[in-house]
Image (cartoon, rainbow, N blue to C red; front, side, top):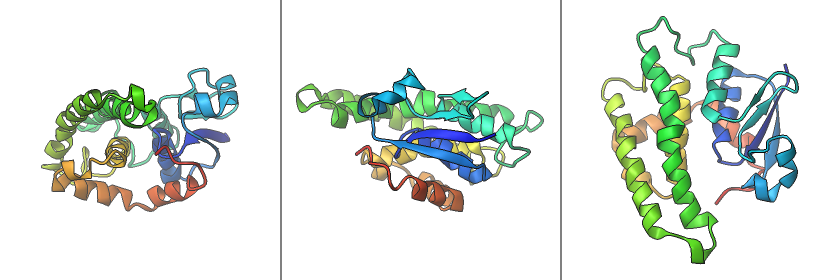
Length: 212
């Protein structure tokens, strides 16, 4: 199996890149400017959605949801402590965090990014960006609640749940929200992003133009 990851620097596909590095799975990285559906139009031939990530193996794998790619890789290349198994008490929480990471936490940040940076000045909507920032922060409070009981979100260890949720905090920091998080969330963020695999993922994407 030879994976190809289509990726934009600091986009949601960073989750997939980090997961590949955590599991030490060989891959080819196809870096593109953001947003690829406008800046790299040939990409639409392989992914009509025009979104990242796209993770392929050329035959059997064609995945476009970032949290799903992380769950798949952990199962495909396990057993690994990065995955929580159905036999573990933390399994329901693990699944909840995997899905919350994008559907609840990353979605409002994408709205903020659009209306403060991507739209032309005459189409920017500061009120929408402010409203969705409040939305995000209210839901991100669930992270600090989980960290009251453990150094990680579930299962008392670093898992793919932490990896995918970390990206939402990473994205929020790109948008200038670092001072909005409690100390426990920031300590967890530093603990997770200090991992060698995250640093390798950062190095792998250095040549790609940034979103902001």
